[in-house]
Structures are given as C-alpha cells and as structure tokens.
Length: 236
Image: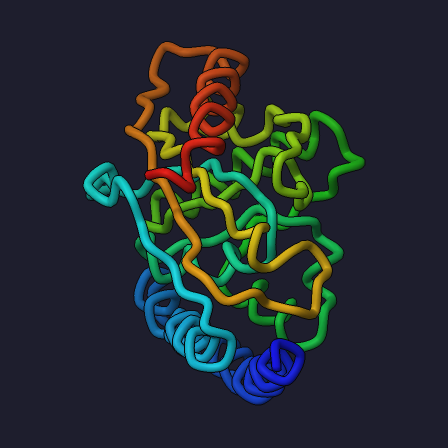
C-alpha cells in the first residue's frame, strides 16, 4: 500500500510540475514577489496531494519567529520535502543552488524564471561574490533567500559540514538569518521513492541579526542551534 500511495503522489507531481513550470516562465515579467506567490501555488497543491496520497503532513513550531521583512533562511537539509514545503511556510522566496540544476527540464527552467541564485561551486571566492551580488538583488526585491548550509541532503541522525556561504551572504548584506530544523528525512529519505505516513516537525529558531558579526560567528550560531534542536523535534 505504501508503494501504491507513493506512485500516486509521483504521478500527480508529473502532471502538475510541467504546468506550473510553464506558468513560471510565462509570468516572468511580473514583479518578483507576486510572481513567486502565484507560482508557489504548486507547493500548496503538492503538500495537499502528499497528505491525501501518502498520509504525510507537517506542523510548525516557532512560526512567531518569522520576521515581517525579507530574510535568509539557513536550514537543515534531509529531503526533497523541504524544498517544496518551505514555499508554504515562509514568504515568497528563492533558493541558492548549483547552476547545473537549471538544466533540468521544466523544474530547472522554473527555478531560472523564479530568479534562483545559481552558482558555480567550483569557482571558490568568485562563487561567494556571485552569491552576494545576486542575493542583494533578490532581498531588495522583497524575496527571501533559502540556503542549506550542509550543501547536500544528510541522513537523519547525521551532520554534514556547515559551509560558510549562507553566513557570508547574510553578513555582507546585513540580512537577518532565520535558522530552521526539521525531521523530514525520517519520512521522506534522500533519493527514496517511498514516503512514510506521519507528521513532519519543523522548528523555526529566533532570528539572528548579523550586523557587526563575522561569517564564522553566524555560521557557528546557526549550526549550534540547528544541531541542538534536531534531537528534540520528536518530543516538541
């Protein structure tokens, strides 16, 4: 039954994703925030379909910690789930991602139309400059920026290296950082076809004001909060 439910979810996604990808491209001339808000209807539909087919829903702790201005979200990365669900939790947003992802048919094209920050990770400090230049532009447009400091999806119970990029962007734009922990990987694992029924917990930490802080300090604060919060999620 779990396999059948997962097949139904994936079939639904195969239907709606190309439609919304084309919509994202066609609506590109719209203001960035309005454009993102319209296209994020895809995420709301996906979360609804995930609950109906796979019995997988979520709850949010700390929603009062979401500021009323554009910020940078630095979050745990365990699953494909958060790349969808965050669009229903936080205001209109874009993501920092590998440039190669923009070549994925439909989905990658939509990322490009939505003004994702695409960087060449092999470029070193030049990649950081690209991130700051594009990030400053997106924040000025009122878009939130979502970054996964570990860079790749990490299995539940494990911890990856927290890269400096997100903290670097935050300190160089003096943007507020919002740390986020969640346990999506326990229900939708990396590269897994199966989705396990249950309730994912998302915990949003108190905002971190980065003015006057060094990137290393911000990175350490984010890592310390997220990693201390992770073991508590089941009992929150």
